Amino acid sequence: MEKGTLLYEGKAKQIYSTNDEEVVWVQYKNSATAFNGEKKADIDGKGVLNNKISSLLFSKLAEKGIESHFIKQLSDHEQLVKRVDIIPLEVVVRNVIAGSLSKRLGIEEGTEMTKPIIEFYYKNDDLGDPLITDDHINYLEIATDEERSVLREMALQVNEVLQGIFKEAGVILVDFKLEFGKDRSGKILLGDEISPDTCRLWDADTRQKLDKDVFRRDLGSLTEVYSIILERLGGNSLCT
Ligand code: C5P
Image (tube, rainbow, N blue to C red; front, side, top):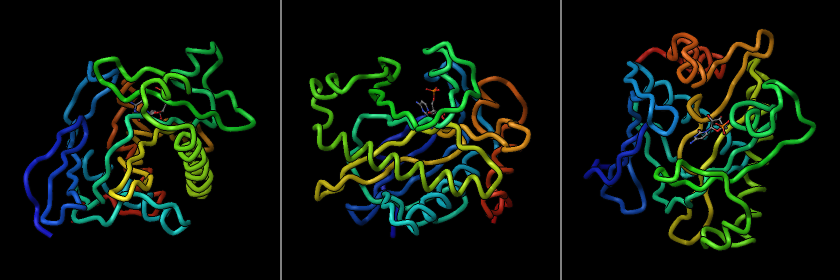
């Protein structure tokens, strides 16, 4: 597979074409951003950690029958993935109250819930990715009712599998964000990444934050806590 031209550059990744038009080459960057890009830093090693964690989690999901765009990890900071048209929705799954939901509902961070909450956000940087309702999704023609149900169902399945994986690693999966895309045949696949950038992960015993909140809230070294996650998942944080 040959790496082609830069197709798209996001906050955390670059996407390149390849000589196969159904496959793209993803390069994980070291940049960390928060608050819709207001806080920024370049953190050595972050791209490698997220690439390795995301590759590992996509592989574990595939073993449980959950299909994603992930094809394979190419190097410390690169992956090959299937080309998909990203659906402009951020699907957030929450198991424990935290972050924006804690603020929105005025409920203390760390409050347990009996069943997961799913939220849809409109993926639009100019608008700051607002929370949107089912009727907004219909009005904007982002997804049909049926597609929205598929997204919900897939998000809940991913949650079940990820909760199991993290529980074994001594980590609480507090919440996370997923993105989905459609392949050429119109099939909906899990896309983007699953990493401590996109999940809230707390140590099960101490409740230490092992995710991007460490950067958002200036709580210490991001790479130190991301390395803990990678190692607990059975990965190796040393560069090859
Ligand atoms: O900020 P909020 O509490 O709504 O975030 C919920 C979850 O979604 C967190 O795990 C956060 O890291 C993730 N998220 C994300 N990208 C965004 C917004 C939220 O990965 N643009």
